[in-house]
Structures are given as C-alpha cells and as structure tokens.
Image 1 (cartoon, rainbow over the protein chains, first blue to last red):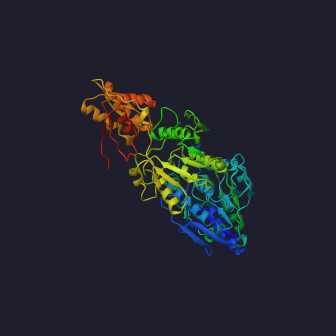
Image 2: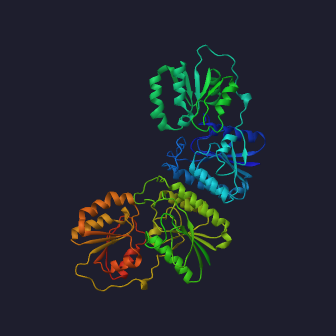
Image 3: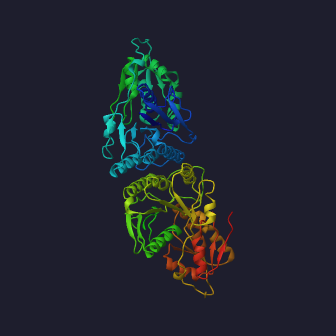
Length: 301
Length: 301
C-alpha cells in the first residue's frame, strides 16, 4: 500500500520527539516501510525520520501547539491559527489532486482545519488517528457534524478509555494501541543507592510536572525531569520558579532522544506519573516498566 | 435555475439590514425569483425576505461580526469562531449531499470557513461574491491557495476597485455592481431650511462615523446617524461618549428600514461619506443621490 501520513504541524517529526504522538508517528512510518509499504510523510520541513520520504511543509513560527489543558466551552483560536489552517487547506487540496499516488491518507493532526479540510479527499480512504481525548469542543463538534452528515471518515484512537470520551459525538471505528518495540528498550536491573525519581513527559499542565516536584520533595528524593516544553507560558510562569527554588534537588534535563530517555528511566528509582487529565495512552509508563522501573501513578477521574 | 444562496451568518437577512451585503442579498433573491428562478436562502433563523424560501440556521449568540477595520498580519479568531466554522462545515456537507437539488451555489459569507468548506462541493458550480476588499489576510491566503492549486471557484466582487485589491492573490472572474431599484427610491426636491447632515452606514471604524460627527460640528450643522451597530465595542467606547457630548446636535436613529432611510436621506442637506477604508461599493452614496441629496465624500488612498 502507498500511504500518505499527515503529521501534526506544530513540531518537527524528529528526535528528540515533542511527545508520544510524534514518536508513534515516526515508528509507524518505519514499521510500514519494514512491512513493504510505501510511505510519504507530510510534515514540517525540519522533520527527519531515517528511511522515510518526507514532503516538507514550511510552517511559520507563530504556529504553536494548542493548549488543551483547560477545556473551555468555546475555544478561541491563537494568532497562528489561520496560518496553519491555510497550510492544511493547501495540503488536502494537493492530496486530492494527487489521490492517484496514494491508497490511503492517515492523518495524525489534532486540529480543526485538519478535520474540516480532509473532507476534500473523497477518492481514497482517509483515516484520522486521535492521539488526544475529547478535550477540544470545536473538534468534538466537527466530528459530530461529520458523523451526523454521513461523511465517510475512519476514526482510530489509542485506547478504549480515550475512545469512550468521544462516545457522545461520533463512533470510533477502531482502537489501536500505541506500539512499542520492547526489544529496543534496555532493561536495567541494578540501581545506584542514590537513584532519583523521574518525571517524563511534555511540559504542559495536564501532565502534572508540578505535582511531581511536590511529591519528590515531600518524599525526600531527588527528581529528574525529561520532556519538551509544549506550553512555554506555563513553563516560564509555573515551572521555572519551582526549579529555581528546588535547587539541586530537581534537575530539568530538557527533551531527550529516546535511547537517552530509556537509559535515564532505567537508572531511576521510579517514574512519577501524576497526570491531571484523561491520559489517552501513557507511553512513558510502558517504557519505564520495560526498563525495569516501577511507575508511581495517581488515579484521575 | 435552482439557486442556493448562502448568507453571512453574523446577522439576519431581514429589514432593517445590517449593511449593504445583507440588503443586496435580499434584493438578489427577490430579483432571481422575479426572473423565474428558484431560490433557497440559507441564513440565520431570524431571517425574513418576502417571497423567499429560507432554510434557517441556528446561530449561537457568541457568533459576532468580524472586525476588519484594523488589518493585522495574522488575525486571531474570536471565541465564536469555531461555532460558526462548524455551522459552515455542516452547511456545505449538506449542500454536497443535496447538490442534485441545485444548479448553483452562490455564497456571500466573508469568513475563512465558508471558503475552506465550500470546497466540499464539486458536483455543481460554486460562486463566491466578495462584498469586502482584501482586508482579511487569512481569506487572501485561502484564495491564493485555492487559485494556485487550481480549485474551481468563481469569484465575483462589486467594483473594479475592490477587484484590484485581490490582484496579488487570485483572479476575480467578474465584477458585478450592486444593483439598486432606483424607481423604489423616493426623490425629494425640497428641503426644510434647517435640514441636517446625515451619516448612513454600519457603525464600525472603517465607515468614518467619528469623522462625520467632527465635520458636522465644525460646519455648524446638526447631524443624523443611521446604521446598525456592527462593532459594539467600538460603538460603546468611541461613539457613545461623542453622542453624549454633542447633545441635541447629533442624533443616532439606529438601524432604519430601507424606506425610512431613503426618506431621511431625501430630507438631509447632504450625506457625509468620510470613509476610512477601501469602500467596496458605497451603496448609500448612490441611494442618497437617488433621493436628490448630494454626497460629501473624502478621497481615501
């Protein structure tokens, strides 16, 4: 099969990955190639996935990741919204013209224009994988409209819990868990006596990095933090002061390449996972366990 | 011909009309009917045009007219944006399904989603009439993308001056002036000695109502103001204080029905037309002259 993969445009699909969706998309592209399929990845022009043909998209700097941590009844679009919206319009017009080149379009962008503009393609199947729960009212409503108007669209998400969040808007056609190559993850049976705790994940409110800092402090352990800055405003306003106050007890490692992350995971006492939203899958929890590190999580309801 | 007219959703298509586009759309619907065509007007549920079949659209209260008076490089969407965007998505999905019912879709909405979602219809011709000059960067870019990607779309605008503003983005297929039934407009050859000046137009910065108040004051004449409040924030912040200060010299009449407006026009000393943007057509200037009232305008470049 000839597959066109459409990436989220807010970050490069390249190591170190901004989040689970980006890592999964790179793995998926490589996995499809290994199975003999042809893959074209439509992604930001600074993307790089070994062995994968990338059709680069020039994305302006004011296109930033959306903030889904505080669901509002009616979200207001950010200043870069229309720049990105026109990129999706252009991309799906192109894909419609080039539909003879592909057997399938598989979109991973969680943006209203990606859903609205993917309706342009009707010659070949379009699959959307929803990497996030139903936290965006505008996307919920678009999915409801597409479902109610009988628009053919295949929807996949990454867990049954995530699928359940969409129940009142549309039908999720299939749950496909995030895949992970466990053989690639180094298992580490031994720990130094002074091993720290670890927080791994995008630096955004819903991931609970603030709670992780508090937990480590109260428990009297050092904490490492690994993850890309997804929400810069939140990072500067809420996290930087806490890092400064914590001194040497808390170290922000930045966004790590996967192998580096797995090594840090394997050398940690435990992965703190105090999530503050409906975590759609929780890739880092699985990765931590694969390195031999237990996960200390909270229940979120 | 069976014509589907798509209205702007920000106001009812009903007397008194919010602006020239709304008045023109009602006239067009009635004119097409008179020539033997079948017309279906897709418009807000509080719309009413005598003799015209309306398919009502339930528009939430937070959907407000866009503010085009201060062009910015990258416009940010207002809170009601996605509510309206999903209405356009739903409407054009419906029109695609029902394309056998119509020979033509003629859209008058000046909103990014109306252009993006009208691409869903490919079975029958889609015409957009641009009632505004190229003041919305996001729409300019969408038109550029649609043009460059060869998407079939017929574009009409209301003056050659307005068409020229789009020259660097797309090709305007036809200029069709706003039509006006001059026989319906009462001519008034006589004026009372104390006749006031008149400003008629949407209450929005680009229409120059503030300048009109100043001109009338300096010239020592009373001023009447007729027009719907398009930009409420501007009205409350900039106009209300001026009205209070002016006292009896300036009277705001609100949004008038057309016949009432024409009568007021005919009894005015002159129509002040101190526009502060690329006026796409200037319907009130023609109407004023038809009532026998001269137009006092400024050059805008």
